[in-house]
Every structure is written in C-alpha cells, then in structure tokens.
Length: 423
Image (cartoon, rainbow, N blue to C red; front, side, top):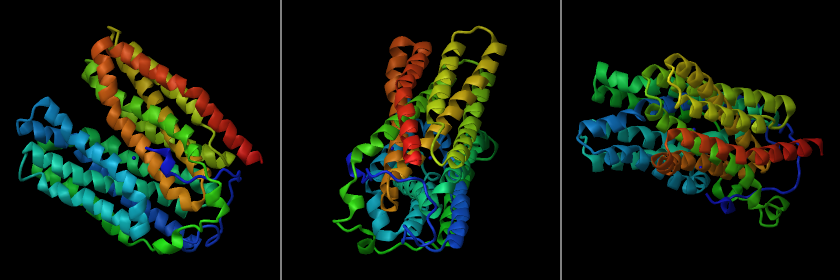
C-alpha cells in the first residue's frame, strides 16, 4: 500500500482540522452523500485490486524459478515491479490532472491486471520482467490515487478512520493471499492462479467506473499563482513524516525478507508473518480511530517505539535454541512490529494531509507512497549487505536502532500537530 520533497506544495500557515461541507474548500468533488457512496466503492475496488497484488507477489518468482531462472533473476521479477512503481509515482500527479481521479484509478487497475494474462504462456525471464514493469506502472496509479481519494472524499474529522478502513481493504488481502498463493499453485496450476490474479484487478476497475466523483478540468484545478496557499507552501513540511515512514518501510522489508532465513523453524516463520500481517492492519485501524478522536495524529511516537521493540524481539529470536520460545517470541515480535508500523503508516499520511490544502492531496499521497515503496524495495538490498557482513541478529538490532533514531522526530511531529490543533 514512496522522492524528492521539492515536488510537493505545502501550506506553512497553521490550520486546525475542520469539517469541510460539501462543495466548500474542495470544489473538485460532488456533494457529501455521493462522497460516502464513492468511498464505499473505493474500498471494494481496493480490496479487489489488492487481492491480485497479494496473490501474485510470491507466485511470479516461483514461476521464474520453474522456468530455470537463477536466484538473481528470480528476485529481479519483483524488483522490476517495485522499481517501476516508484518511478511511475513521479508522474502520477500529472496523470491525475489530465484524466481525473476515477479514470486514473480505473486505468491503473487495468494496467495492473491485464498484463497478468501474459505470464502463463511463458516463463522466459525478460518477458516476466517486462510484464512486471507494466504492472508496476499501473500499481503506482492505483496506490497514489487511492490514498489521495480518501482525503478528497472524507472530511477532516473522519479522515483517520477512512485511512484505517482503506488500510483494512488493502491489508487484509495480503494476510490471506500471500501465504495462499504458493499453496494454490500446487493445488491447481500456475495458469489458473494467473487467471484469478489478473481478473481481480479488472473487477476493481469495473467498480471504480461506477464511482460518480467529478474532478475539475486540468486548467481549473490549478490554483492561481497569486494564491496565498501556493505562495506560502514549503516543501520541507513533508520531510519529517517522509523520513519516519521511510525508516519503517526499510525495516518492514528486512522483516519480511530475512525472517524465513534467520529463523529456521517453519512454524515460527508462519506465525511471525501472520502476526506481522494482522498487526499492520490493526495498527492502521487503531491509529485512524485515535486520530479522529483527538482531531490529530497521536500514535506516531508510540508506533515507532512499539515497532522498534518488536524488531528487537526478533533479534533475540534468532539466537534462541528453544523452538517453543521462538514461536512465542516471533508471534509477539511480529504483532508488535506490524502494529507499530501500521500506526506509523496511518499517522504519517494523516500528518501529510493535514499540512496541505486539498489541491496538495495528490502530491502528498505521491510522496508518502514513494517513501513506502522505495523503502520496501531498497530495504532488502541494503540490509542484505549488512546481514551478509554481520549476521541476522545484528541486522535486526541495527534496524531497531534505525527506528529509534526516528523516535524524537516522530514525537516532534506529534507535538506540532498538537500545537496546530490548539491554535
């Protein structure tokens, strides 16, 4: 569900969270009742598209392996997909200005789903990488537009819960489909799994087209050059939330990538990955509830702290000889890390949206998604070098230390949002 902050317009003027009446403050959208309907459709569309993502993420590398690809080639299938996603996110705001939100989201789902049907005829590595690049472009359109639509469709006092619900829609499929994908390839076949994985995003595209959201023309959506909102923006406003969620994404990549190799116990690994998946969904939801209750993001600092403690627990798991202790510790560590990182995801995105006017929602969503995807893509490579030199226990410990470094920054963000709300 990430980058130059200089591409983002931000408002330096303080403003308290407020409820925007339909048609007031955000002329891009239709009246509030239709906002609610469109938001429900957005959640269902995200659920369908995310199901295609979770199902195929572990399956495509297996298909490359079945075709005789070397380990580097196997890893390149998903690496190309993630790289294309990050690069394409740079251009997503321009596509939104050209097409509008509904059309961009539908186009992204089509580009993400249709190419999947090209997997089954061949396991030739260059073909798999090419398909992954096209799908990455579509995925970039989906994640940036989806996150931005949450902010566009919901008033400020419901945005935290809305982001939590959106997190559920894109997170629950991963909990189910990530472990199910490889199993399904053994029970049925690769072509059948590819057919399902390609069809699900197409369902998401069809649901998206049922939305009634209207965006203004590209010319009308641009704020006047003399606007105070534009004149007073500072790109550095997004830097702090960007760095905090980037660190979390780097850590999450290390967790998912190295846990199976570091903990040589199948049951413990399964429990740890399941705990992480459940934790991240619950963390995003709870953070949204607290954000709306307090009218500002409040769980960023605690989220960073809990995720760091979870990572330290995993470092300890890698040196224990007790199988029972390993299962319990990895379950607790996975839940803690996932829950903390989920809270970080929700609160950083909420903080970014709180710092921009509606015209900046698309760019804020772009920056946040680039942080998440770039961190996820780079984490396994960068921390893999450390693991090769120092071993897994020290790698997990160093990752926890990296999270600890961002802790003061997270509390500074919390303090700023508290002052903004009190102003």
